[in-house]
Length: 211
Length: 211
DNA sequence: TAGATTGTTAATCGATTAACAATC
DNA sequence: TAGATTGTTAATCGATTAACAATC
Image (cartoon, rainbow over all chains, first blue to last red; front, side, top):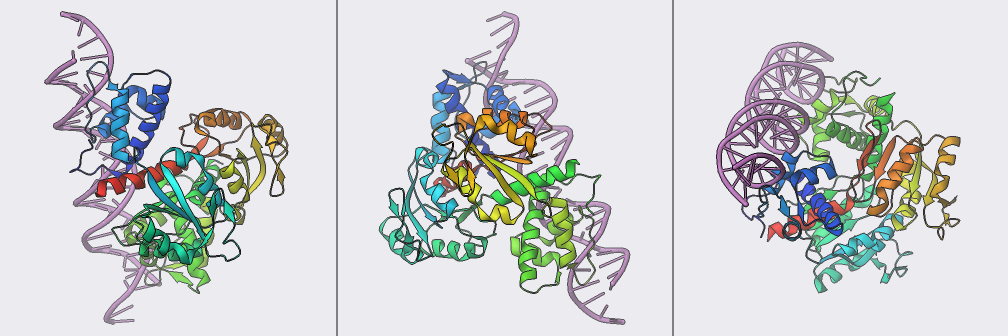
C-alpha cells in the first residue's frame, strides 16, 4: 500500500520507476533479496539515495538482508500504477506517432493504445497496426465512450498547444508531450515533456564544450 | 562567444535550449527585443531563473529593453552547438528507430542521420528513407570513414548495454539512450537518457496518486 | 555473537527565487 | 527625467549524501 498523505518528490518517482525495472531484471536472474547498495550499483546512485527514495513507499527492508524482491516489486508497481492498465490515445500519425502507437514496450507495461488521431484528412482512414487513424475532430466522441487516461502529443511544435487543449477539453488528465513546444494546461492536468530534441541538443552542447 | 571556463549547470543547459526555441518563435512573430519576463512567461518560469541562466552565456541585455533577439539567438545557438551540423547514427531499426531516422525535426536542427543499424539479419538491406539498414557489425567501418558525433540507441532494454559498448568502441562520444535500461560508459562519453517509458509511468503515478 | 544493512537525522550541496542597486 | 529591466548577491528551498544508532 503506497503512502497516501505525503507526496513523493518528482525525481524520486522517476527513480522508483528505474528501481522497479532493475528489480524485475534481478528477479529474473534469481535474486530474492536486493540491497539498497545493489540497486545503487545498477543505476550509478548512492545507497543513501535509494534508501531515501524507498522511505517514501510503505515497504520495509530487513537489516542485513535488504528488501524482499517480490514484495518490493509489488509495492513499487502499486505506487507507480504499473500494476494497472491504462488507456492511451496518440495524436499525430506521423513517423513518431505511428512508432509509438506500435511500440510493444508500452503495451507490455499496461499502456494500451486505443486510438490514433491526425488532423490531416489524407491520413485519416490509414491503418496503424490494428487501428484506423481518425480525424482529430472525433476525439471527444471517443473519450466519451471510453475514458482515456493519457494522451500522447506527437505533432509538430506549432500544433502542440491546440492538441493539448483538445485533449484536456475531451477530459484527458495526463499528457505526454513529445513535441519541443511548451504547452500550458490547467493545473489539474499532468504534463510530462519528453524533450527528445532538447536531449540531442544537450549532447551537442557537451560535445561543443569538450573541445 | 560562449563562456568556456565555467561549465553551465545541466538543468540550465536544458533551458537554454528552450529559450533558443522560444526566441526563434518570437522573432518569427516580429520581436526584435525580448525580456527575461517574456521568456519566463512563455515557459512558465520566473524571470529570475531566466536571467540566472543567461548569465552563463556571454551576451548582455540592456536595461529597459531586454535582450536583442537575433544576437541572443546566435549566442545560444553557438553555446548549444545548434549552429553546427552533427553526424548521427541510429542503432535499432524497429518502429522507434525508423521513426527517429526519418524525423524531420532532427535534420532541421542539424542532426543528420548518416546510417541505421540493426542486429537482425532480416532487417539488414531494408530501406529507411534514403538509407539502407546495415548490420551492426559494420558500425566501426562506418565511423572510421566518417566521424560520428551521436549514436541513438533504439533497441530493446536487454540489448542497450552492448549497443552502447559497440558505439563507444567505434569512437562515438555522445549517446542518446531511448531504451529504459541504464547504460554504463566511460566518463569521457556523454549519455542522455530519453526515459520515455518512465515519463509514461510518471503520468500513471500522478493519476494513481490523484485518486 | 558479530557484522551487515536498514531507516532516519543532520549536513552538504545545488538550484531557484527574491531583492535591489546599477543603468539605459 | 522617470521608469523598466538587467545583472548579481543573498536568501530560500529542495535534493543528495554522510553518518550512525537500531536491529536482524
